Image 1: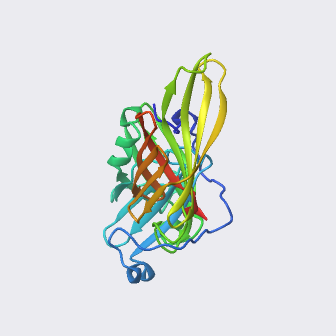
Image 2: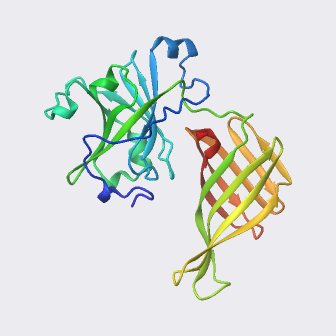
Length: 281
C-alpha cells in the first residue's frame, strides 16, 4: 500500500477550491533553466494543491516547458513521491467539457515506482485550457488508472521559480521515521515514529523525537526533547548533525524533501523522509 496515499478515497473533481494566496516564494531556477528563460516564459512554475495535501501527491510543484512539451511533477507533500517527468500526448482529444482545450501528459514512471506502481496502472497529468495558456490559479488533474479510473483535482498557483534550498534560511525539518520499536514498556511496544529538527543558528539545531507508547495495544503519543546539537553541517545538498549520541544524515532530493537516516545511541538506524517546512514560508 502507498503510505499517505489513500487511493480508494480519491474522487473525481471537475473543480477544486484552493487557497487565495499565490505563495510566490523566493528561490533559484533549477533543472537547467536560467532565470532569463523563466522570465521569458520558456518555463512556467506552479504550486498545485488538492483537497488532501497530506496525501503522497496532495500538493506538488509543476514545471511546464514550452520548448520541449514536457511537464515535471515534484511532490511537496508529506511522504513525498520521487519527482518525475511526463511528455505531452499529441493525440489527446478530450470528450468532457471540463477538459476541452487542455493538454494531457503521460509517463511519470519515477513517481509510479516510488508510490508502488502495483496499486495503479498509470498516472496522467491533465491541465486545463486556462493553465495551458499561462493562467494563474487554474485547474489541473491527476488521473490514476488500473482497475478503474480515479481523478484528483488541483488548483495551480504561479511561482517565480522552482523550490530550492536557501542555506541562509534556517531549516525546520519534519521527518517521518521508519518505525523503530522496543518492548521495554509493556503492554505493547514503544516505537519511534517522527523526529523534528529545528535549526537555531548556522551551526546549531535542536532535536525532538516522537514516540508511540503501547503500540499495538492502546497507542499514546509522547515527545522527547534531546536538546541542542553538538555538531551541525548544512549545505544545499545535505544536512549532517549530531545530538550527543544521536546522529542524522540527510541528502536533499527535490522540492522540499530530504531523505536519509537516524542513528540511535544503541546503534540501531531508521530511514527518514523529511520535509523542510521553512521552504513553505
